[in-house]
Length: 88
Image (cartoon, rainbow, N blue to C red; front, side, top):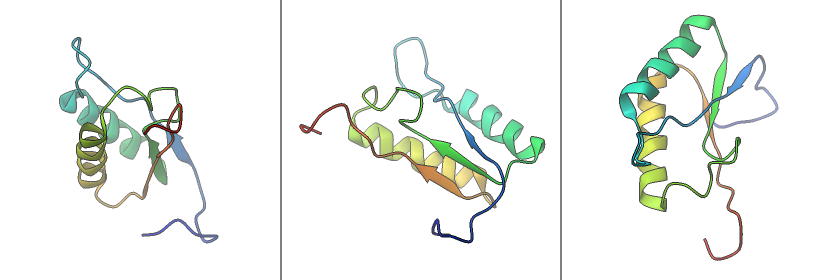
């Protein structure tokens, strides 16, 4: 589903769980996505909304986004594409 003027409800701004070494923590991500779904949100917003845009490299960010979209199943997911500068 594409974000349009028909979007409505609550879209949670989600944290990006990471392991101690900084890599994506998919186990924690699954728990977080499941929690949001059980709480009744209408959608989720991930990557870059809470200052973590510069953390993952592009391939890690894509893998994380794909993982969240798959796990969220029925929920729309807005993926941030911001960057701290022009180099990215």
